[in-house]
Amino acid sequence: MGAIGAEEIEFLLIGMSAAIFQGVAGSTIDVDFWINLPARQYMLPVKIALAQGATMLRNTVLELSDGTLVNFVYAVTGLASFAHEYGKAVWLPFHGLTIAVLPLERIRKSKMAIGRPKDLVHVHQIESTLKLKRAKGKSR
Image (cartoon, rainbow, N blue to C red):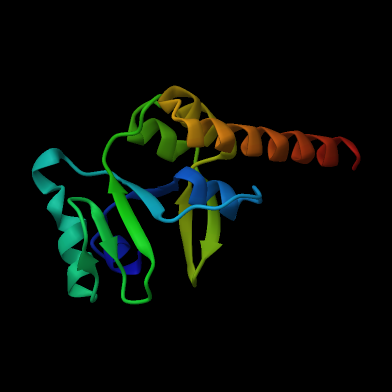
C-alpha cells in the first residue's frame, strides 16, 4: 500500500476485508483494493507489488511475501465512479498508514448488486453490524 501510495495511485480498501476492518464479524481469504487507473495502466500496481516481493497468482491476484492475498479491482459492481466513492471514503489507520476505506453501507450495496451466495451472507453480516452501530449511536 505504501509503495502504491508513493506512486500517487489512489486506491480504496473494499470488499469483506474493508467490512471486517470496520467491525463486521466475518472472514475473507483476500484483501481487495479498488485502484483508480485507466485500463492501459492496470499492470502498474501489479509491477509495484512484484518489485516488493509479491508473487503473481492470477491476472489481478498476488500473494505478498507475508502470505496475504491481494486482489486489484478496477471496477466495482453496483457503485458509482471511483471518484464519487473515494470522496465518501472513511479514512482509517492501517499498518502505519492512513488509507481510504469504502464505508459499510457502500460495501453492502455492492455485495447486493453482485448477489453471489457468499455476498448475500456478507450482506447479512454487514447489516447486523450497521444495526448495532446505529443502536450504539442512539444510546449515547
